[in-house]
Length: 310
Image 1 (cartoon, rainbow, N blue to C red):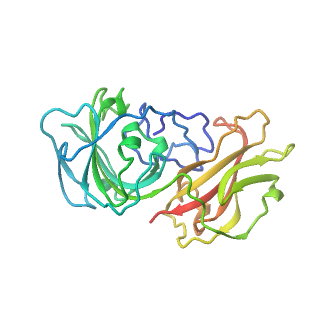
Image 2 (cartoon, helix red, strand yellow; image 1 turned 90 degrees about the vertical axis):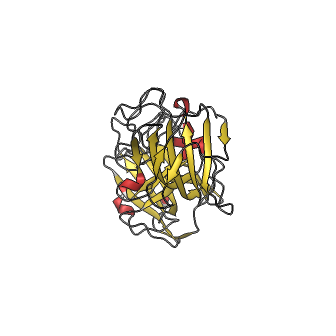
Image 3 (tube, rainbow, N blue to C red; image 1 turned 180 degrees about the vertical axis):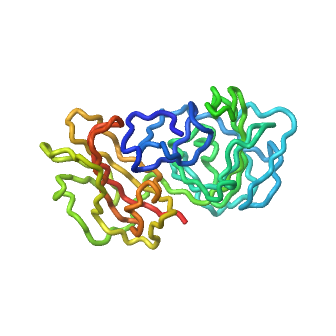
């Protein structure tokens, strides 16, 4: 669920994990309707209280769906409590892409979403989730299980259209942080070039392995159908499978001179959205060409596969 989308790019191609404070279903997981990019408005950072006593009772072991019970009034501030600590784990930044299992429930209310119930963890960028997630998970560590209590202002102030969360509700989560990828992570070393971008009239900019932009040569004819081209073979250890979620850094190039330019972004995609990527390894680079549509102008998305999640 997106907070704000400045441009809807290749909606059927790259599925984003994008959760919003404004609408849709209450879930921080990828959705079928997610656009290739969701650019959230920058939320004001709330104060996060890291507490040493649990805000609510959590029953159940790591790796299983917990049961939550509540007593008293909900906290009025954003709070995090560490259920299972892992002081050696990587510290999470508020711009990381995170792989997590989670369970969400309204304070003294019903469960509204649970990756445990779906049977698979979810990957999402903390740049595209509600403030309670973005800032509540900042400073936690990979391998930890934490509890979050999120007041309405950092969750869904107007509630959600499905009615599972009402305006003013405090929502709670138990989150197992399985992995985290920093936004400035370089792609693994590339292997053999498959296609020279210049043959496709593309100028791809990168520095120290970090993709920064792509420019389409002036006068190039816009694509009339969607097509994916592999530019470089990856050398990472893991291959993308049909069930994989993976982290990509993506840059957009446009065929219209007056099209809005966008910086490169790190987002989450999956093999169900891009089945042509199955078999590729981390470090692979692709170019996705898309014609003009109601979602946006004709464009090419160049993306590097940074990491393939388990």
